[in-house]
Length: 452
Image (cartoon, rainbow, N blue to C red; front, top):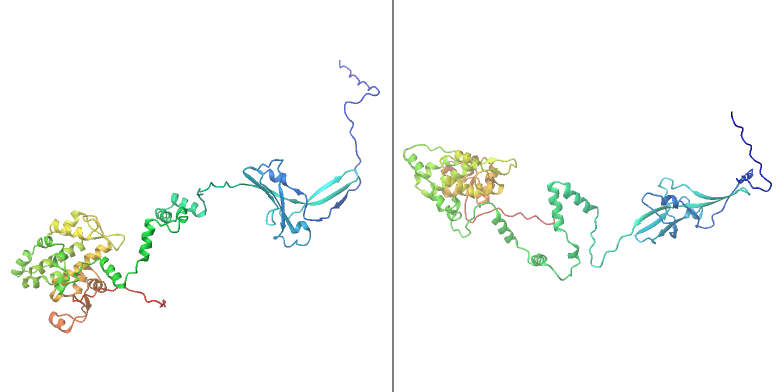
């Protein structure tokens, strides 16, 4: 059986209920909205709490900020309408030990920057709502820079230094070398703050060299001639034979003594034809052997060795340089020559000597100028036709003429007497070693004349 619910006992008179009765207020039929006019540029500020809720930013509640105002420059369209439109407010505080807080208005380019904000006060009894225009400020924080101690140098990191650090870590070897060179040659702040009158030893040497008089044109020409790849000439020579001594051209008296010429002499005595790998040597060996000049014949023999060693060189990917073949291949290419003579040539005209070494452009020019000097030495009257030697060296006529000029020869067509005596034609090019020597001069640009 279900029990009957007990009825609630009625409250005695004067006894209060457990719950307060709700007071029902009557809403007004209409709300009257009034806008308080802007009398000056000062107005309430909103948005501080929203800005302070930015992640990583916490503003203490007891923080007091100093207000600042200035004339607005960007909002020219609203100039003259209201004091709030013509001015801009900023709040700032440095009360924190390490952080500065700054609240400023957003510009028109920011999303919501052109919105106008109002603050309202509503009275429910009278039904009146008062609105006043307010400013919305966005709060940001910045860490205050720590001042450096006296005498401490603060390292500044800018975009260039950051890019250099990335280049040293991930760049190519060429870029790393360039950055390292810039770093080494940079002027440190300590040097910049040094006393004006104090110079280190390197700076003193540079200043002293700058104070020295500039070298003359003859001194510059002498320095250029000294560094050129060609045999050393004798400045005190009285005859063409003394300009380039034979021992100097062949590398010393020991090398000259190692030149065996008996095979050529026996072949000529037996009326046999001597055929060599050189057109220049083959056309002259018979006449020199019959002339009986042993010194010239040994020079011609050494000239043949240089031409064969030049032909045995291997080309490289650089094009301007050559490479000495390995020792076994070089011995096969120069069959009939002693290892002493082959090694002596490699030591003179290769970087480091020996098989597999590189013959740079400078050493290659040095070899060709020695060959040209030997050519005018073994020919009659120190005059030679450049065509035979150019074919042996596989050079064009203009390049062959340039090498002969580098050793002081005058280059031109043959004379009438030379054409009759040596059976040359006007198309031949002749190099003559005469005193005084005529070396190529250093080019000096003409001042005041521009390019056309």
